[in-house]
Length: 345
Ligand code: AQP
Image (cartoon, rainbow, N blue to C red; front, side, top):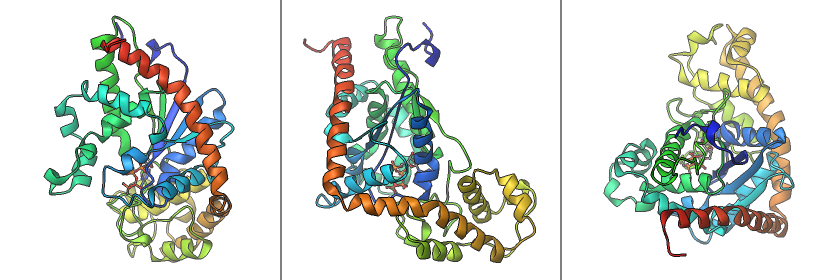
């Protein structure tokens, strides 16, 4: 039996999600959302985009704020171009099949696989004994999120690469243990592409841009206005050297490399193109050019976000409709899986 994706005969589906753990930022957009929209507009793929609120409770959270945070994430998806008439947008917790499949996958994944996950080590910090068990098994739930739709493509940023390898390991192990010669689950392909796949903090070129960074100046939020964007780029950490003319000159300059990468991702150019234009110039010239590009790009997204977020009823309608469709696809997959592992039926 071969376990390659080519073996898998099911429909081509896309699944991805974001945590409602804060305001979505440029890293979330360039690393993932932009590719979500491209895959949706490709036309041949059935796309499922969820707000992963079950993942959000793996860390301390405010239960009163969570429902609105889910609505805000859904509004950001739509403002960024995810079309609820073309893609299924829903809250993860509204589809119980994710949790059911996660339990089965907890019994497929091996402890050693999870112990290698670097995101757990980063998020748990030094006192990992006090981290929730949910944070440890987070990648297993993520595999269930994906495979409960038998998704074949998952557009994510580079930081998710290791989790997607684990998802493939779980699918391969399940297929081998239970498949009887058949690929029950696809070996999902990560879609990680473009200069935006890893956007770094504006305050520290060695840390990724993140919702949970305590400094708001470290990120550009999708809902920031023009003044905030220009101010954050002006304050972004850099070095005193002018920009190099060749990409190799960025290798030891993480902050410069990050800003050039952001410019490239926003303009659809390569880093080499950007350096051909700005090589030899200092940040005094480059930062205002980057701010102009970022403001022009993000203004329609933040305007649309503000319009959508003021209409809670409309967002709830979209989330309810999405959940209904998601359940209709996910429930039969879980029923089939339960039968395969031998549960009473
Ligand atoms: N800096 C980044 N560059 C490129 N892609 C990124 N992603 C996140 N940060 C960057 C991608 O965004 C998607 C959603 O991520 P998530 O909400 O599940 O959580 P995360 O990866 O842990 O993102 P954050 O912003 O750092 O959130 P917190 O602070 O809550 O942990 C994923 O596809 C991710 O790759």
